[in-house]
Length: 115
Image (cartoon, rainbow, N blue to C red; front, side):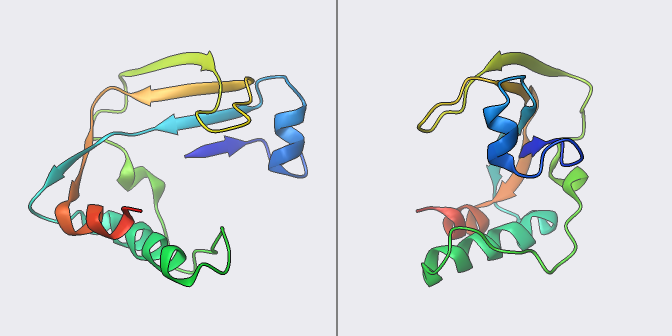
């Protein structure tokens, strides 16, 4: 989940260009289970739709999405470091928060988001 201060910057690219570590990434790992995680259905459906339409690289979520449900049960323990994005151009002013406990996702949901 990538975040920036919308009150301070008009766009994501403007926040990246500021070079003041105003972009944060919250990384969550998922354990693959037999049973689906109903809180992840909205995301898996939208990603699958994005992959099949190929008309746009972003999509508006019309459904209610509560990001807290994507977090693991224990949110007190995480790793924090200053780094970069993992995709080009690998911008370096990013603060990473990596949850040290995974959440769960179903096999069917994983198959929907595989490229």
